[in-house]
Image 1: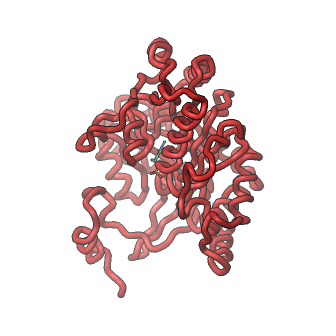
Image 2: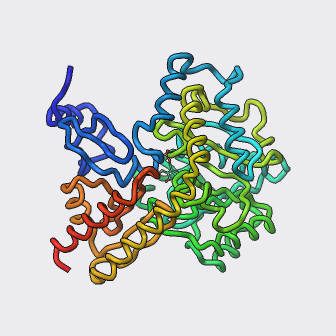
Length: 403
Ligand SMILES: Cc1ncc(COP(=O)(O)O)c(C=O)c1O
């Protein structure tokens, strides 16, 4: 039975958990997409500058990913991890070939990837007869997920409300404060977990020098450095991993969002001498690395590398940042800052809610963080013309609202 959009919205209000609240897009339903475009049930067309929050990195209905999913679905959706899964092994080989890591554990989401990383860090310390080393240091304003452990690692007290007490042993550093890090990271720290750009905090880059300093400090004090690349990985910042900008090698990296271009999958990666502590029976996931998800991810990764998307992202990024910086010159009182790397961009305003709403009315999808920042995470398949279209529409909204 087909629903109209208002019928769907009404039913959703009755049968869905209320955790996503009354969001601005709750009266819009998309039926399909193509590249960076989404189409509603009524046939209206939207330009997607959010990509499902950094998920649809190759755009919607990418032919190679769609073909891989269709072929895999016609053969085998799932078998347990008691058996060899060809696409899982191929995916792990691709990920290790393009990173510092030797081995990969697969799961289904970003939070699960971080859970696995935190468990591995604890296990690594305990296997080395250091049971006192169980504390985890993360950054204020960070976001690492919604499970109890990853929420404990998330440095935002607003998100902790209603869920206390959280797990013991988690503390939060002010980003880019070298002195505070040197004081907090010590012999009880099993891991430091950090995002290279804090996406959920409003696209706040962490300085490369600070990440290098954390690397040195972790090595010196015997803690593992975990890079949460769930939002920044998969080429989003113009390099395959954002930590490559800082020229460091982390101990553990987590990945999810864009990995399956929309099919849920997460990954936790490490060098062999660390990953070997994830001993048989110590961790697992029923769906993790299943044939369907890994087939989609193999197609996504192969396309990303074979079609040299990293270069394209860097070129598109230059055009987008230039367009936005030009707008900032035109509207200096409205735009406070344009920041980010690659196709992960934040525009900070005095007040962004009305701008976000006006863009949506003009059929352009962005995300508004804390009423101040517009977050842009467009798919890598956008064209220069679509960037110009976005910048033009944003300029028109700012003009309409008065400088
Ligand atoms: C940096 C970071 N870590 C972890 C997560 C959690 O990922 P998921 O929602 O897939 O559990 C997110 C999601 O926004 C994220 O941006």
